[in-house]
Length: 125
Image 1 (tube, one colour):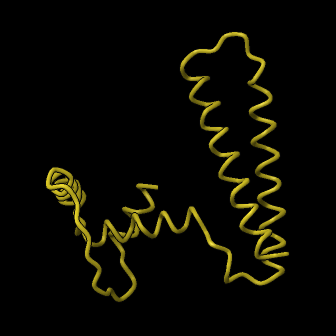
Image 2 (tube, rainbow, N blue to C red):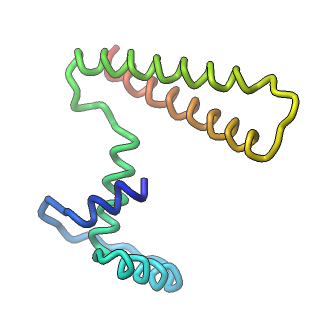
């Protein structure tokens, strides 16, 4: 996600409007340093983070019925593959930290895909 945000921050394409929020001073200083190191403005980096977040969490309300049907099939396929991957490592007798992290990541991905499927189906049906 950070890579996508950084790419957007380096190549902003849309007109901006005002938006205000508050953050802790320590976070601002650190964020300012990160942005300077990467040669992007704080505004563009925040916009990049928002864009990357929106891209990873689509709302689906602007898609046609055909696009929603394709998205439903795609998500079902991804969900099935993720469940199969989890099942293939679930019976591993030796669980190290890396395997636990992989399992946790797969469970998170399954929850995410189920949520996305639910959003698509709400729009579709």
